[in-house]
Image (cartoon, rainbow, N blue to C red; front, top):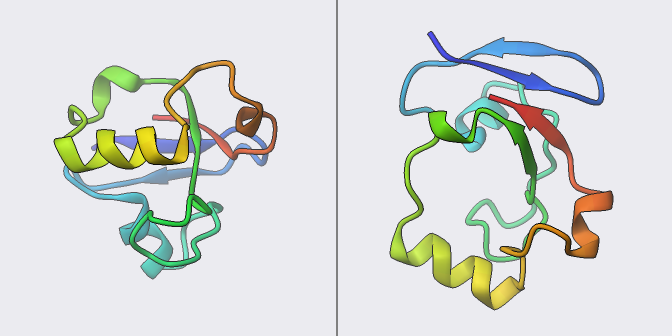
Length: 87
């Protein structure tokens, strides 16, 4: 079973394969803030510091959203305030 570790607190959560962070939020297990619940506002932006290979590939809609929010560049300023996690 995959595990998500929130690096700021060290909290570890076992997740079912195919789960999303929103699934964790709905169960009260996520430390990531959510605003609109559809990723359109960027509130739930995270920085994956390890385990990127465990994530599903970006779909067209996800890539378009990252482009619209200008969040796909690794050195953007948003990284400083984004929750970090290891997957």
